[in-house]
Image 1: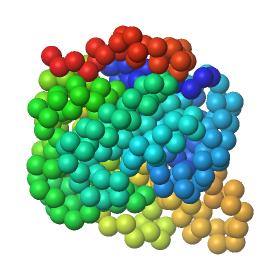
Image 2: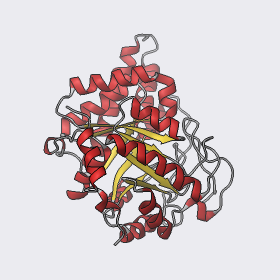
Image 3: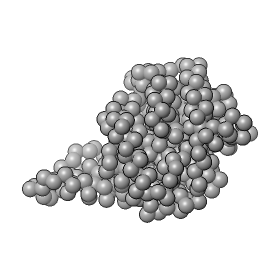
Length: 356
């Protein structure tokens, strides 16, 4: 099936009131696991690739993996998304590689560590939007910096994440500023800061309103009801996976992620894309540890990776079902990039970035 843009997927999700998990990938096993889960429940897919993943696998291998996924699973629409682009060059190279969506994270400077100014973010995101929309690709922006509200600090993920202690207001997207940002940049989706962060160690207790500001989601949705919101750092870090990981030799301290019920509440208030990486890594790592501990003689990598893929497939299938995207792949006919570019040029897609 032809690749699909993020904008078309999220417009469909908004029309039918569901959300889409966006899974980070960097190898064959992850891609196969996600696609098997999607086929089992008839869900469209967002495969997203970080700069670290592009460096790890190489652009040629990423292209081959996605080409293979399209051939093996022809009925599943696939959006290939650049996660946390740090510059116009990063996003531009992704578009040139066939990505149908890019995230320009202008909340941090090009070093991907230093919080930027608002004007810097607006200017850079606008420049990337012009290139993306010019060829029909989608763009996701970010306003506010990911990080924990209880500590004021962020977490590094593949070399991306604010370093040092931040002010509380930097860690929460301002709804008034969101309106201005979206109207000036014309992004297709907006990632917001609300207390989530990268990695496994998001919260020191089950999150409440003091550390997970769902009120920000609701207020921005009230101001911009047609805007597609994105929750980053939203793995749930399931307790059962932590227990399996530790049972077979792991040493993960007790931690909490974003509860699925909170994500579902976000979906009811305009969240359409939910980024998930840690959950997939943990599912695979726990399965690999189990094989290593229960069969000391095993040395065939496939004997480790097959149960790891099965565990990740189960995790992904659960998220497709929990977020409501199951059953929607067969309802979508991808629009070619050239046609999307024409729609951007004639203004027929602008209505989703108009404040109420």
